[in-house]
Image 1 (cartoon, rainbow, N blue to C red):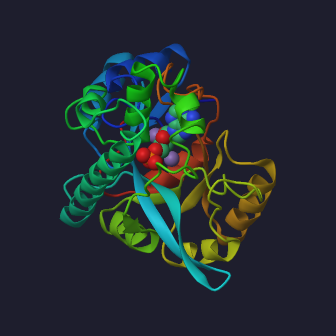
Image 2: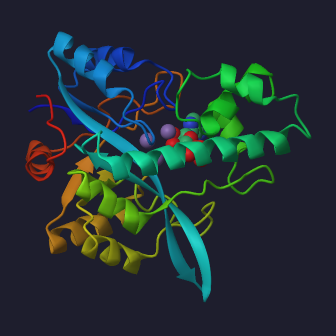
Image 3: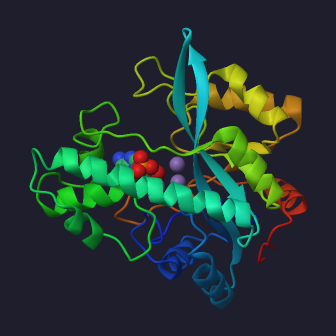
Amino acid sequence: MAIIDLHSHSTRSDGKESPTEVFEHAAAAGVDVLALTDHDTTNGWAEASEAASRLGMGFVPGIEVTTRASVQVAGRNRFISVHMLAYLPDPENTALRQELLTTVNSRENRAMLMVDKLAEDYDITWELVLEMIEDGATIGRPAIADALVHLGAADDRSAAFRGPLDSRGKYYVPTDTVDSFDAIRLIREAGGVPVIAHPLTDISPNASRGDLPQDHFEKLIDAGLAGFEVYHREVPQNAREWLLLLAVEHDLIVTGSSDYHGVHGKPNRLGENTTEPEMLERIIELGSGVAAQL
Ligand code: AMP
Ligand code: MN
Ligand code: MN
Ligand code: MN
């Protein structure tokens, strides 16, 4: 059976390898179909498409859209970060493009604010952070992590995330970004298929920031959410069981993926979780913005 992995990152966002290298590694790992889903950008698609053709692999164009849900917790409004995978959206769609640009800019402002705070205690500069990434890459905490590693302040990215970059820590600044409902609408209007990435990774009582309340899922489904990434290393077993029941109840798409960030980016390995061919078929039937290359 074909090995299908629908979530990966390159140097166009926070991955450590170019789109070409990601596809070369995927081919070596026996992956048949790979989606490149860099954060808030489609800049890697052209190179991914070429590499996939050369290697005889399938390529599914995607984006991991940074969104946030506004929820009521104990009578108070809170924002919960929701990463929304968008498969096969039209990259030329003006409204979606505009929203992604706004997010990329707000990620940059937020990263600058974090670097300002960190600079009170570390020798970090904005220039050093920019040296860690390609021109035009979507910036995130991983670029700041790389700068801290470069300075010897952390052993690797994961150590930086457990330390100064922890979302509960004093240096953390959240990203101001598109509401999850608006993102679903924008992705749909661009012909894309919205699937929540790694849902409910933060449901444990001692989790860093808490996760989406379960009744919120029904609202997102009513708004046009197409499915969930159930099989992902960070989705706990009890969440998987609940999500699978919800998916059956609403006849939704269920996917599985690695969320690869490069050999030295994160421990996630290509093909470690996979998507059933029937589920990819459903994504292809539903998506109308751009064709999958199979
Ligand atoms: P941001 O979106 O800028 O808040 O940064 C979060 C991103 O950092 C996620 O999309 C992950 O890909 C990445 N990330 C989170 N934890 C780690 C980790 N322990 N090691 C490497 N990258 C991580
Ligand atoms: Mn990432
Ligand atoms: Mn994510
Ligand atoms: Mn990801």
